[in-house]
Length: 315
Length: 171
Image 1 (cartoon, one colour):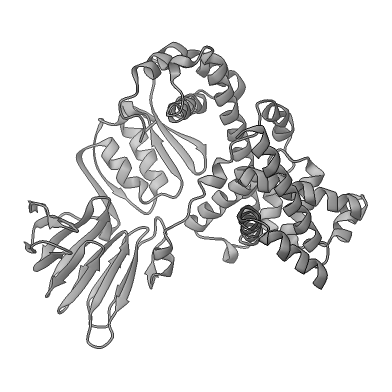
Image 2 (cartoon, rainbow over the protein chains, first blue to last red; image 1 turned 90 degrees about the horizontal axis):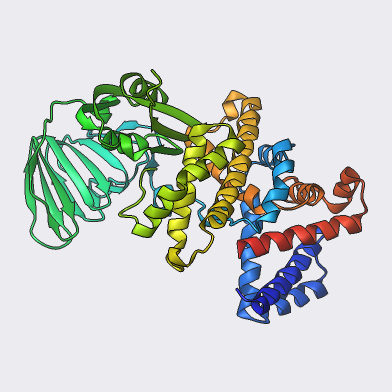
């Protein structure tokens, strides 16, 4: 940003700020409102900035007031001391603003959703059982003789009584009486069948049938090779996470789905082998168990920011 | 730490080898905690790596000064985020159990608060307070003036300043 545009942006921000403060001070007269409309119409930049200003107010209105006020206006000696340093190194990059995380809009609008770490089961109108894994969302359509579940996010397990369809972004699954799991991932959705049969139809290309004990990746333009898996092993449906000589990195990536916040680990830990059965309901405990059985240390940088590092030999 | 570093450039790994220990030491003296210092060291190099798309490392004549600038920024951020989280968890403890948000809501809310906190960073305390009371509690300027023991005119000046600051940061 060169000095001239910087000046222009500053002037615009100041003008907008004056309007905002005037509004807050007790509302605008009819004349002032007209004047503000004319200000906004002066250029696309004016209007864009005004929209930004309204978005700013909107953000403050989204947080519970007493709680937010307590946190944002906290007395804090650390802060005092550090402020000087912060200013000395220039304006802070507003990463939090840019990187503000929101769940996809789709999953908020869905009929049913689970939060991170939550699991939920229900019986559908036709008697089928549906379970939602962590951070998952579905829409249900059981009107006019249709029996369809649309998987919007995450993972579900279905135990169908009669014929039932599951729709995903990649295609359609049809099942008679069958038990199966569907998990949305970056490369498509993985379908694992433990009882009966499920027919997969990608958006384009030929379909395929998956039998009990098989697993397949459904992509929008095709189906991957069928792979065998052990359908008898318990899994998230029973609240369990199983590791059988698994790489720690893999296990932690899985665990991360169930934990709000950040979970990071030193790359040196990636290939440690883990075997065990873990209870998904208490992920802090899982981390403690890992620390007890592997040469690693769990470090809570904050409540929501956990790092795992190799344990140093102090002997 | 994880999710990191698909094949770092040779120059970056050289930079990393040459200065990691030194940066870690510098951060450790300020944090008193070797793990967090290691985390922030890692973050600093990742940040440098991300910024290298526009400028090459070879052109850095003073890599330590650059690393220090980035590292100090992350350190200040870390302290701010940590103190906000303490205040947040403390405030949550005061809530009646029935009103307590779910773990996920807590996290989303904390993220939002962190973003707002970052936005307000750098404003003097009274300006910040005036803005928070106006936005969050809906206080009018007269009430804010009474609380801060300043004139309404001054409150308005504070508000203009806070709005301007937020708009510029958010640009």
